[in-house]
Image (cartoon, rainbow, N blue to C red; front, side, top):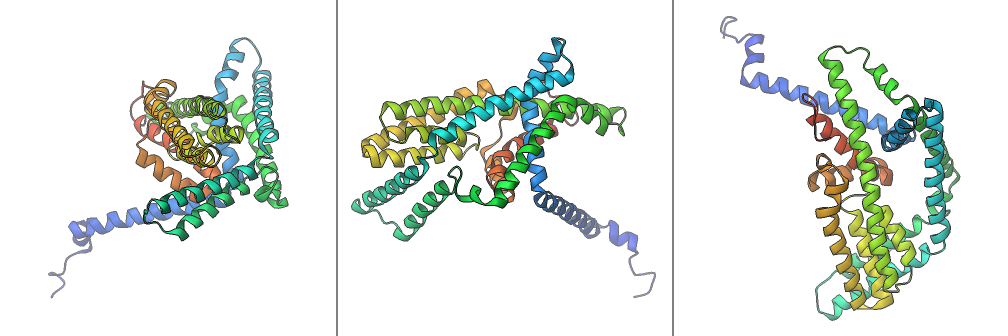
Length: 355
């Protein structure tokens, strides 16, 4: 083949195979860059997680700061009032939960394990083929998970973990203060290089993200409170022991969508199985199922904007990725981040009037 017969580099790059190769290279480059970014963020999670938590809390508390500023208070004073009120309320609730249930978590773990063992016995008596070893592993996992989250013991007992926790809390409070006080100015600073349509898009994205995060946090808190009141009240009415820690668990699990309510229902049913028998456990399961249906079909559409609705598959993937990258904190933060990302995509070119 002569030089004239050989295809030129331009021809090889612009034919079908060449275009496919270029596109594949671009995709690989994006994957590498995203992987490097995620790896870096994971390595800096002591800073990243407080930053994300502060951002979400700022979105939820910013209406209070804006309301105080419209009443004539200086920005610093309005921020301090909102921040201190939030710390007192949130800290008081957490302290009350800890002092109330700290001595019952071990009993809750034992009750859950006994309930799983009793369920296994029922399945064996019913001649349902099951793998006893797998059930024992699940039983051990449940006990380990609950006992590892005891307040003041387990994972939190280590000096290193405790130091990181205190550092993270203090960092979150400091970042939250500046977000509440100067959030608009901080975002405007990042938008300085942009002009015209690009700047309008940046402003639109900022408003969209703030609305989505604030609505998500406030809506999730309302849903969690409703779940805890109804399910917890039912547990107290049925006179199930450990009803109080179960109610706390129901409230906290609501912040992990899709799987949180299921885990809380399973745990409540196992405890009810041990303490009240199969009929009581079935009643608890029925209450949890009804509450979850009412929550998904009635409560969430009211307290949350329709724009926050994500497909369950998206939520599941986000939860899995968040849990792998950031543990429990990652599972809690994954869904609001996914919701904001989707809202930004929808508002990229045109305003989203639904927010």
